[in-house]
Length: 219
Image (cartoon, rainbow, N blue to C red):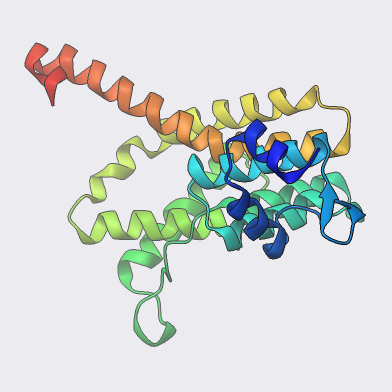
């Protein structure tokens, strides 16, 4: 198909498709003449993935580029490749440490809590994992704003996250092709975060109504 047809199928404007081609988010089409190229179903699939990561997942073009490099890497073992892909998707929250590289008291306490949580749940995860650092930073920030008591529900959060994590991998288990497997993890992680956030808010509204009355549903 020509680029115009690719645009019509996906709803992505031609100038945007050309931008993605320049940025390497889409592979080049097959040249049919010096100024024309042909695109196939793989281009349409990749373009829809890029738009989903951008519009629903909220990733930047640069982050999408990193994710796609991981998706297309056929040299690494699948487990390592999945780890690379998911690490690209974990948002950063700045440095968890205090001034001059020394961790403040809140960060030290948060790190101890996260270490205990990982050990108690028997999770196989490296202490330097980006997600671990993000959790440390979040807990330290909660402590600084006077909400340190949030740790009382941390294990409940971990239990829910564990169930969701298992569901994610159960979803991907049926994918046989390598590209399908890695894409499923990427899409499931990014778009799954959006789905889970929406479900969490819906559950909060329901719990608020049940706890505080019907007027809470209008909040």
